[in-house]
Length: 460
Image (tube, rainbow, N blue to C red; front, side, top):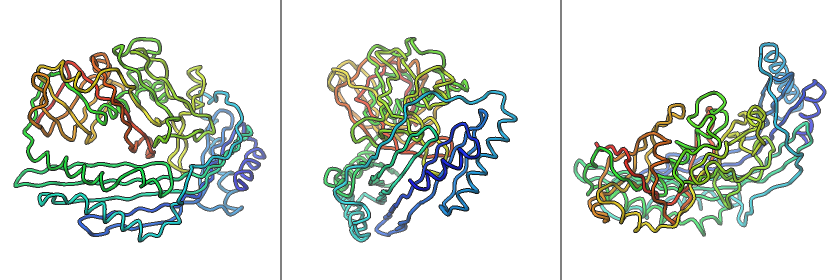
C-alpha cells in the first residue's frame, strides 16, 4: 500500500479531481502437456501499478512494472498530462457515480498456498490427468493445461478507498481428440476454483479427463445434424454461453450508451418469456468471476438483468452509472494493473425453473438436444448470434435417439428469449474466460437446461 499512497499523494499534488491506483504482485504457473511432451512449463511474477487520473472531465492512464520512486513519479506525471491534454479536446465531460468509501483487507481462503507446492508435483498432476484421458485406442491426442495464480493487490483512490487483497486460483483444461478413419471428435473440458492447491480435493482433474475422452469418442458415432427450425434443448453449458454472449454483453452499459446494444432503452420492457430470469452476480459463492469489490473499488452486487421476462438493469461502472442516472453496481473490471477498468461481466446465469430434464423432452415430438459450446459469433447491436455446439442428439417423440455432430444454434437474441418455453431445475455453473477491449478476465457462465421453440438449427 506504500506505493499506492505515494501515487495518490502525487495525483492530489498535480491537481487531479479524482484518481485511483492499483498495485499488484501476482505469481503464476502454467504447464501444458501435449502428447506426453511438456511444451510449456513456466512460472513468474507480474508486478507493477496502474494509475487513472481524472482532470477537468477527461481521463489519463499510465502503468509501469517498475516501482522505483522516480519511475512512479514519471508515470503519474505522464497520466496527468494525458488527462490535461484530452480535457482540452473533450466536449462531453466525464462524471462518476457516487460510491461510499471502502477500507478492507480481503483474502481468498487458502489451506495450501500455490507457491508452496513444488513444480514437480504440478507436473505430475498434469501427467496423471493426461493418462486418465487415454481410455481407448481411438484417443489420438490429449492436451492438458494446468494454471495457477496468487499474490497481493492493493487499490487506493483520492476519495479515501483503501483495499488490499490476496487472490488465489487454479484450473485445469483438458482437450481430447478421438479419431477413427476420416472421423474426428474434439472435446474440451475445464474446471477450477478460487482456492489454494487444495482445490484438487474438490475439482477432479482425472474425472475431467475421462469425461472429455468419453465425449470425444461419442462424436465418432454421430451423424450430421438436420438444418432448419426445430424445438431445441440446450444444456447448461450452451445455455450459459447464450446468457453470457448474447444477453450479457448486450447488458454491459458501455455498449448501451454507444448504441451497440439491442437492449438500449428497454429497461422495464418485456424482452423474454416469463420463465426467463437472469443475473450477473459478482457475489456468487466461489464463482470464477466473483469478487467483493470491482477494479474501481466499488462494492459488487448480484445484478438483476432480467426478471420473469422483463429487463431490469444493466452492468455499470461509475462513469456509465452517471451517464444513465443509475446507481453504480460494481461492474468495472481490469485484466491487470496494465489495463484500465472497463464494464465487464462476472458470473452470468439464467436461474432454475421447476421442470425436470425428462419433462422438457416430453414436450418435443422432433427436435435437437445441443450440448457444450465451441464458441461462435454475436452482434449485440443487431441482436443476432450463432453458437456451435460440441455435440448433439436428435429428439424424437420425447426420447433421445441418434447422436449428431457439426450442429449449431443461431437466431435473434430477443426472439430466442421469448421462445424459451421450458426451464429445468438442474442449474450448473461453468468457468470460462471473456475477452473485451483487448483484455481477458475470468468469468462464470451458468444455466439449467432450457427448451427453445422454433430455434434455428444448422447442420453441416
